[in-house]
Image 1 (tube, rainbow, N blue to C red):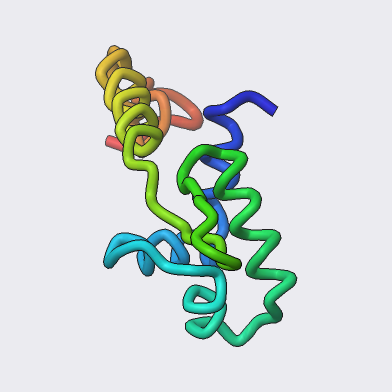
Image 2: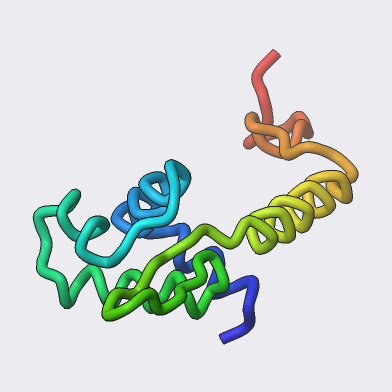
Length: 108
């Protein structure tokens, strides 16, 4: 899966977003992250691995623990892509349809 797709997949899950919110406060080990959730450590490990694959977090070994850190560069790249994507939209979508009058168009 392409890098940008992994980022959006990772951000699409509420548990992973909550993990990222916790990491905004500072680096945490896996046990500290897991203690904030009512799911098993294996599930937390799965979420952390997906966040690592997407490049949203980095980990480093400190003794016998893995310490997790946000990797903000990937967030910046995703935000930059979104900004360019929306800047390139020539006309905003019309929430009322095509704007053409006629059988299926707005009534006057």
